[in-house]
Length: 240
Ligand code: PGA
Image (tube, rainbow, N blue to C red; front, side):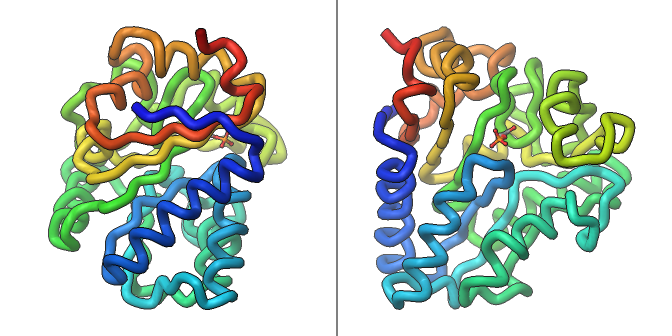
């Protein structure tokens, strides 16, 4: 794992450079995208680069990590809605080339078809990840199997608690999500993980310096050959 510690602003700019490099060398690349508050600064940077003509998304396609079960794409807390409003509506990507797992998915068999779609598109070239306080990547909560494909995951109480800030009350936070599996994520050619803030310091120490274990899903990224982790000094504060 390559670890880069910079201010939030600089980290977003450096991460954006990986997109510039990829989109300019392989315009029809496949992007793996993430939601949450962490990628917002990076998305703002990508929008700026697109408006300035430095990058184009017109030939690429994208696959998002996850979606809440029970929310359709028009719900303002759905991840489809998040992606439209925070990235897709502001860049030249073709909406019909953007994929978000379906919140109406009913079974793991149906969910696994998402992996087939990713493979048919050529596989993810660059996967963006945030991280949960329990080490989840996508919505792969601790103990999700290493080989897992896209599947339905029961959200832990701590994840629902962390995400309740976006809903009127905890009762409205969905109990399940559909998420790319750890195995799906590990197949990406290049991975970027971004974490900011002191509240991510403890999990980043476990992720980077702990033994790879399914108890801390993000620590499994140590087993991937091309991962860059972007941290601000607060998120990196417990690293030795
Ligand atoms: P955050 O969420 O970016 O809002 O901190 C990250 C995650 O839970 O994966």
